[in-house]
Length: 119
Image 1 (cartoon, rainbow, N blue to C red):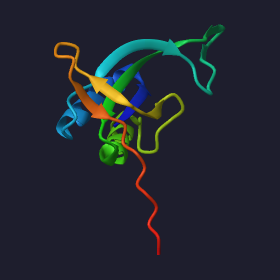
Image 2: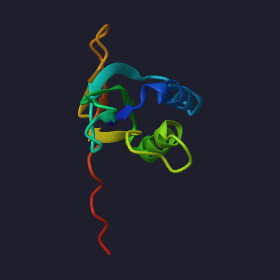
Image 3: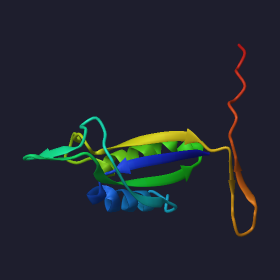
Image 4: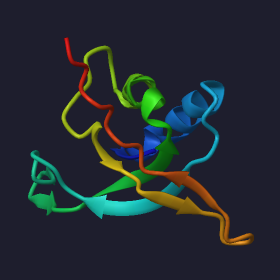
């Protein structure tokens, strides 16, 4: 299982959530966050905004769906046809185990790498 954390512009968040829902991935956690990336904030006249509002989306998916979900997020989160600075960032990490709080049942286990094929 893989956890995908996507930081996106707040105005693109609903489009990303809709795209994930349409693609069959309805389970998403959304948090309002503030931060800055390579652009180091935003300067408007004499005022500099060091931290900009963003949305942080968490999605856990099977490893086999990782690339599809990442492309779905990228396509929905981009502004314009080629994207722009500040559109966001995606982080991917492995998830070792998942438990349902209400039942205590373990739902997923970290997938191990396949054994090498000997020729």
